[in-house]
Length: 203
Image 1 (tube, helix red, strand yellow):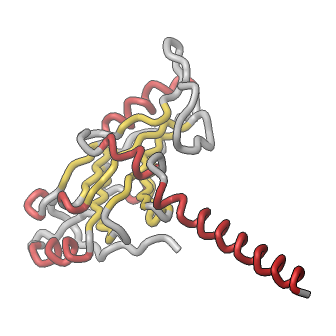
Image 2: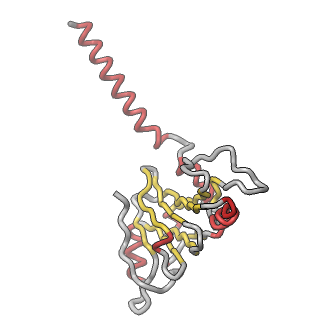
Image 3: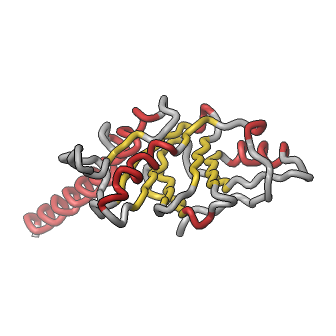
């Protein structure tokens, strides 16, 4: 009985250690997606993660984000909300464009170019305090058109994807990624338009 009891205790302890180790990996890893994306914080446009192959340039050998389709160009913009709200601005065109906001626990919001207003899509990621401040500074006569997202955590990144349905559209998809603007926002920078409530995270 003592041997069986000791064996059971050992297995239970080993199981707990294994589960704790697996759960701690995202927090302890220095090469997770949020950490790797931080190199783009100083850029005013997305850092290209996956560039589509064109006649002159082959596709990259590897990328650190999952690439579900070789016809999708991918870029990332990292944010640290201690520096201020993060604004991602894109002009829509003939190619499908999507924006997805991620934190350490995964994606918390996504939007496509179908949400654009007059050909422009402005996604602003804020803390709750920053959202309240932006709302207080809104002009009642010219309220903001921004899609405002209250982030669940202060650091993360936005993934920009552009779909090239035809090989001839690949150069345009790569260029569309670089045409997106990623900047630190302030209430005075917000364009006028229709007011929006803060968007809720997916799920």
